[in-house]
Image (cartoon, rainbow, N blue to C red; front, side, top):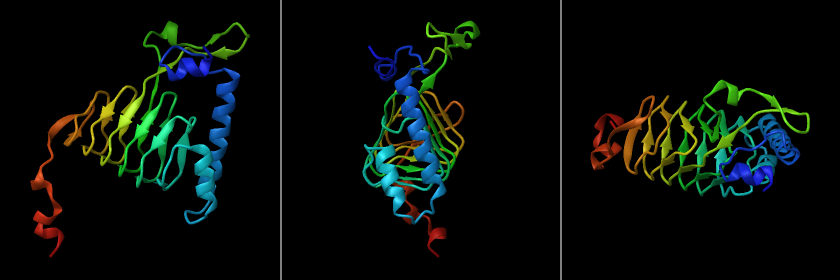
Length: 204
C-alpha cells in the first residue's frame, strides 16, 4: 500500500511521504490564494473547484484551511462562516444544507497517546517524521455546527442536529437533537416547539 492508501484506510502512515507532501503543499497554496481574494471575486469558485473537487455549491466565507481538500465532500447548499479548518487526512463527508459557524475545526488526525510513540523520529529515508493515523468524519444533512466547535476524528453527526457553540464532539451524535459541551453530549431532542414562528418576540 502507498502511504496515501494507508492514511485513507485509517492505518499508521508516514506524513513525510513525497506524494502526501506535494498534495498538502498544493492545497495550502490554493487556500492562501482563495483567502487573498475578495468575497465576490469569481476566481474563488475556480480555486475551490481545484481544492475541493467534490464540492457542489458550498459557499465558504474564508479564510479557509484544508490539509488536502480532495478528501472532503460537500453536499448542496452548504455555508461556512469565517475561519473554517478541515484536516482531511481521512474522508470528511458533509451533507446537504449544512450551516457551519465561525472558527469551526473538523479534524480527522489522531496521534499516539504515549509520548515515546508520538515523538518525532528519523525514518529509513533519513527524514524526520512522526507516526500518525486518522479517522473519518460524517456530518449529516441539515445540521448546524455553531461557532468554535471542534469535531474530532471518527465522529458521525446525525442529520438535522445542532451542535452548540464551543463544543468538542468526540463521539457520535444522533439525528434531530441539540447537543453541546466538552465533551459534547445530547441535551434534548429538537421538536416542533423549537420553531421560530412560536417566538413572538422575533416577529413583533
